[in-house]
Length: 269
Image 1 (cartoon, one colour):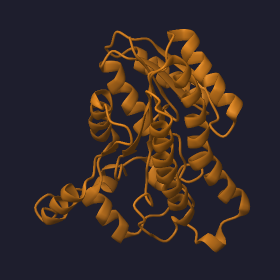
Image 2: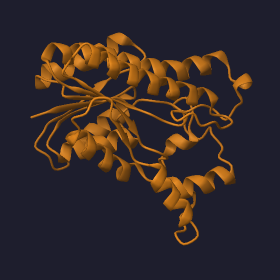
Image 3: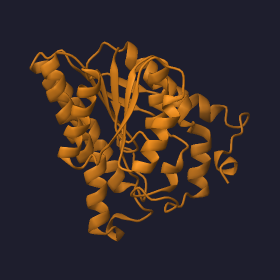
């Protein structure tokens, strides 16, 4: 039975991916920095159908020792580490770059970029030793070089994640290792992440213009996760980019926006 480890998986996209892996009979290792949320998620996920086992490991992805303990816990419990997903991330406050405090910049860089690097570093060492495995890093706004006010630092970290992932995939190819490295591009997800920053709730204000675009292009994480997990399980290609919101899909959404009215923000109020 295969094992998946997902960082930042007590809620949101990480948890929804975990649900789909469990349904596919994977052993699932949830991880999060919030112990209360983590314990609740392990309990909930364990109660869903699936032949695999579910465990939770507290992990601060910015601390390498924590990430190493996460990998060790997975190996000790299940014997292998087949898929590792670097999903943990935080949004930035609604501020211009010159308004951000040093601690806010550092936190974004540590979680969104260094956390991905730490996870990839540790997972690569484990998978190299066992002779197999796949690592997927989650992209975000900025990965495609898009710009938007108040998202400069978040976009910077995600652009770096995209470069880092492709560079890691290239190193795997050059070293001729039997490991896959890929990117997950979930598009616009309608979660609390959109209105939270630095791991805190309710600190990002969205303009009506932005909400309009999100209503056209956004989807709930359970819909996106089902697609991403299905594609990961069947993927055999290194440097694969698994993309939910393709250019073609976005075009069709805009063309049909007048007929398919959606208001995610009204539903969430």
